[in-house]
Image (cartoon, rainbow, N blue to C red; front, side, top):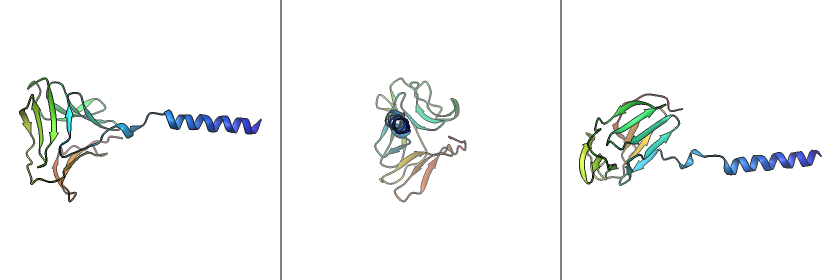
Length: 139
């Protein structure tokens, strides 16, 4: 009887581990050349860095906007790209509607949505070159 109960518990735990939702499918980073299309997001805990259908790029915490590009209303097929020179560019049908202030040398940049709610672009030396300067808890 005891062995049967133990086996049942082990099987239940194994099934939970196999079929439980995982955060591993959520992106928290972008590399040079990556894009976010309309309604795409980087997600970490309670934070979402979202390319909206109105061309506005918004950082949300618990559904509340804490930072945005103020590029709303500039199109309806927008996408965000992290370029090889570390610049974030929002374009609508190939026309640029917003760019961040940083533009560096060609490199392998990485944009990260961090636990502290700051979105940072790092160069290949892991130096931060651009920040949203937001400080909120994503967990």
